[in-house]
Image (cartoon, rainbow, N blue to C red; front, side):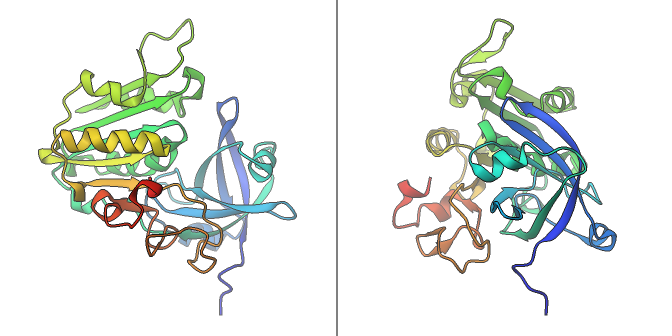
Length: 278
């Protein structure tokens, strides 16, 4: 019987700098058979570890359409992430998973898609964004609203330029603190509402970012006529085992690692402590 706690070695193929403290790692399982057969869904996460240092849940940021490899965008937050961000291409790290549910796309066919992200919240959404672009004919308009503290902290800078030029797609960016070269919007992500049409009548919203951002984004979405069941939120709770056994991520009778991390706002409203959830 397969040991569900046993991680598999994966080799770092390449590293992309996103900001002063964030990098995107493209990795491939050392076991070629596993690399070819591995499947996952947008919104799921893996437990990543370095032997002798620790283990942490990290969202998969690549699209399932990209076979044979995985991508993870990792910000330096503690001992493990600092160690990972000091690695070079060719180094080995360890993965187990995938875990959790996913952002639904099948239910969104023919609908307009709205992606709202703050800071390191874009990497989990990148997987579902590119999955939607991989099946572009199935959806209506795509709008991406993304904010960061500074221009340097915007992730996927080159990819943002690609998204911006795609047909029937609108990308709106904002930063809290501009530099001398910044020509875009300044302010929190909800200030972008005044720059575009946010019509929830035929829209599905996908949200990820800091809790305070999520709180005010949900308020804006509801005022824009988005239905509670059509607002999908990825909760960033402290997950440890990834299997619903340790209890670290329990909230409202749910385990974020197994019942989530993606919940509708309709579900979150039923939690006994809704405010603590987001």
